[in-house]
Length: 269
Image 1 (cartoon, rainbow, N blue to C red):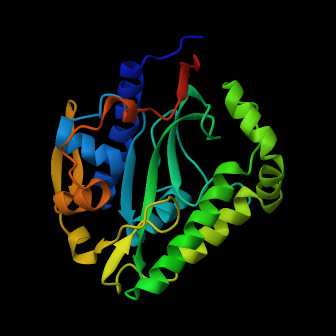
Image 2 (cartoon, rainbow, N blue to C red):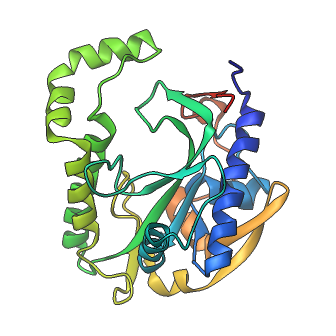
Image 3 (cartoon, rainbow, N blue to C red):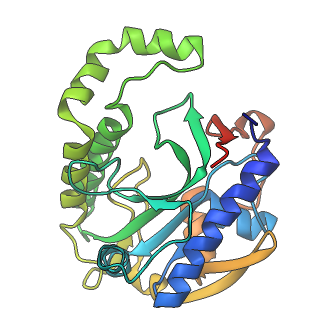
């Protein structure tokens, strides 16, 4: 079993992102690089050197169309590529993960799907009222926590095992609530505000951030160079990145340059 270096993980992630891009272009589906991946494209013309994941967002109408086309068989990803379940009893999270089964995966920080992946988030409407928006985000954080902690496993790091032992009742409560149920509740919460009729939009199904952007900003896309290829980005990337990271062109201090703790290996399939 060969464990991948960070550079090799980047190469494998680039392959998954390329496959996602291929499908979206073939079927006219809108998407944008997001979070650290968008930041990497703008600041580094590729991966942030210490990052080990990829995030993209899709307007909810395109996200649901992707689901419908996959279910009908009109979209077929290439060999080794799998799309995780975001609904029903087999749901991992209330968003997609496009995985490559050639690469096994384990994380000390939280429990994930079994293969290397990129995250595909839906973009939904948000309420104009600030209090309602905060309520929406509070529920998002609640369901995100349950999804992330609902499955017990023995981690690599001893301190993580100790922490889980101390918080066992909390983990047990998340387990009993269940990933699928939390995913269903998170999606229902996010769908309260329609993408096409809302003035602002954001990722409201999962995560800890509470940023929202004018919907009009997500109706225009450009291409940005990323490593050896180019991918779609929201044209207003400066506004999006400023909301998320403020002075985003400034490198963080070295003690903040951390990975997600992924251990990735070739499965030999």
